[in-house]
Image (cartoon, rainbow, N blue to C red; front, side, top):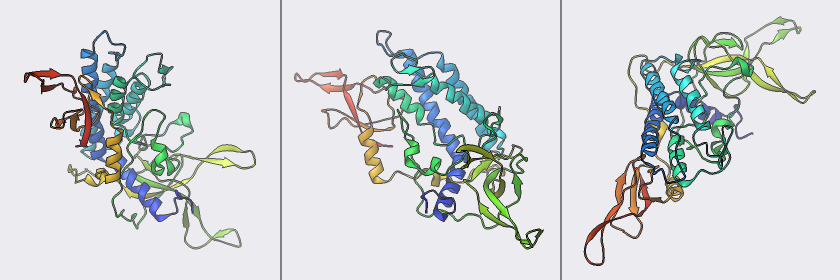
Length: 359
């Protein structure tokens, strides 16, 4: 069986859980908080980086950065009330992701590592710290609940389970997104699926929908008899009420060309979270990294010098000074260190910092 076969029970549970996670209040609040850390660090860089150094951040990006932050704030207010129109065209979360995409394409436009809206080479170390802070607010397939685009043949946002489950899909050319930690026991899918709609029809309610093939036995090949049966026809998608049910991408073996195919969609789970004004405990969506993953994160953390911007909240220790460990928050400027010289006098020194524990 294919590792990402949507008829496999574990695959179905994982995709279902990840779609709930991607549309949770806690994940979008986490995105907002991480982006706020980046916003503060970026503004600090614009204001304090010496004009004599070659790396300089475009000040014009600040307008976009704070526009995105404001859109997150507006969307969170609505989501906390159980309103999910925020993912529709022109609404806060949809616009926030669009402006974020614009920011990533114009983040650092130095010719040595940027060309026509794309990063083409590694950023300088100081710039890369900021870039990592920016990407810390990003989640794989966070655009899954967005309204589908007519300009893209009304195709479903999530067309393959691999986009969520394959760890290699989280690795991009110049950065990597955090892979989620699943709970030890994934919940079963709902037992009583809801109504059926078809591609091109209006979605009746917010929730997770499964594309299905509807079949019914026929007497003499003509008259329908018995109950209808449903078989999976692709990856689950999160659809927002009053949007258009999407199409799927197919393949015509006779012409060797991709096709756009309509399908039936069956409601698996209606999303009614937060409608009572209460956000429940959603800590399951952000379980601590496993020990081996935490060790790898420490190994990957860059060494920083006094004056650099901290990319990761944690305990940092100055090189050659074992008793210098201090707590530093992401986005803060790495400090210098008061040390005693050979004559017994205390002086401030620029130092190199190593991450010893994430917090």
